[in-house]
Amino acid sequence: MKKTNYSYIGIAFIVLVFGIIFIPRIVDRISNKDIIRNESRSDFANENKSTLSNLAFIETNGEAKKVPAFSFTDHNGKTITNKDYEGKVYVVEFFFTTCPTICPRMNKNLIQIQNTFEGFEDFGVASFTINPDYDTQDVLKSYAEKYGIINPNWHLMTGDKDLIYQLSNQGFNLYTAEEETAAGGFEHSGNFALIDKNGFLRSRKDSFGNPIIYYRGIISEEEKVDEDGAKEEISALKEDIKKLLNE
Image (cartoon, rainbow, N blue to C red; front, side, top):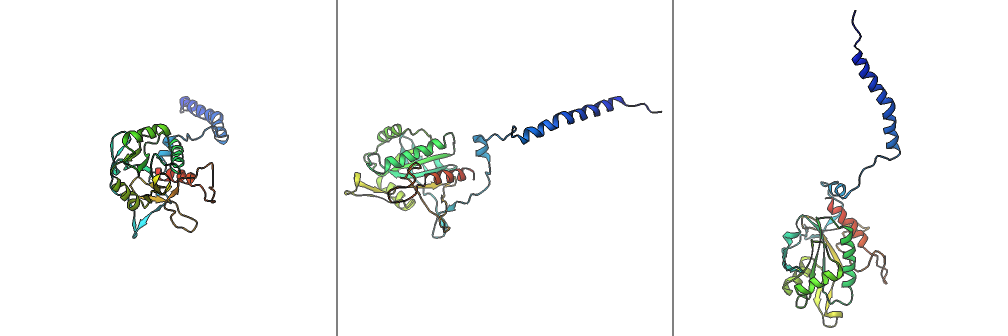
C-alpha cells in the first residue's frame, strides 16, 4: 500500500489558495487601470525607432535634398559644421539680430519649440545670421541670452556673408537678400526648414499629397491665423519633429 505524499498535497493547496485570493485582485487592478504604462521621455525616445514616418523627402531633380556642407562660428565661439547636427533632428532659420519685423516672432516660436523638446539630446536648431558684419559672436551671444536660448544644440552662427547667402538661397532655397528699402536693410524668408537625423530636408504633405516643403515661422500657435488668413504651422512642426525623433 502506497503512502500519501503530503508534501505534494500541501504545495497544491497553497497554489490553489493563491489563485483564488490573488488572481482576481490582479485582474481587477488591470480592469480599473491601476496598472498602467509609464509614459516617460525614455519610452517616447525608444518607441518605433526603426519605423519611417509618413513625412516626405524634399526632392530636387528626383533626388532627396540633403543639407550641404557648412562651417561657421556660433555664439559661443565654437566652429559648427553640418557634422555637428548628424544624428539630430533640427530646425533651420535665417535671421538677423536687428530685424525690426519678423525675426522676433520667429525666435519666440522657436523658443516655444525648444521648451517643448527640453531634455531631448537629439533635437537642435540652426540659426544663421544674414547680417554677419554686425552680428558677431558677442552680439549673437547677447541675443541668445536675451531670448532664453539654452538648448546646447541650438547654435546661432555667423561667418562669411557670401557663404551664408549661398547656403540659404541654394542649399535650403530659403530666400535672403540685402535690400536697402526693406525694414532693417535685409529681406528673408520667415519659414523654417526641418531636417532629419541623416541630414535630409523633410516635411508633411498638403491635402493634395504634395510636400509643403517649409513651415511658417511667423505665426504663433496662439494667434492661429494671421491678418491674411494664413494658418499657423508651429503645431504641425512640433508634431513632425516628434515623428522624426522616432525614426
